Length: 138
Image (cartoon, rainbow, N blue to C red; front, top):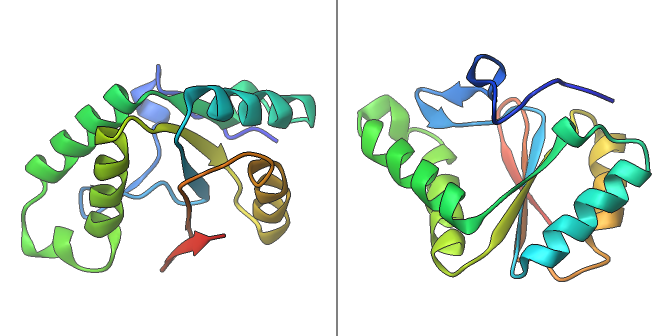
């Protein structure tokens, strides 16, 4: 499974919704410990994921990106829906030191498979970005 999305290649970065971060087809998962995010990433790679489809981001990276995203998108359309609230949730977790894993999981089976691996360690939240919804998975 590969979406060839990379934090090093902005032309393939996940999509936005009226300018607000909205990575359609992805899970955004926050972990209290960086080691847990890295363990889940390694387990997903062992299970067949490409590294580019399950990328770890530090709290500093997420906080900077979330702050920039919220500051750059203050218009009415950017505030429709739940996108900005999800980014605010990401920012708060990042400020508390959470590490993040961005996982490509476009279908129900992909999301369920990823969640089976995620649930092996403590995590704060898992947001699943679908076409018209952001679902919080448990």
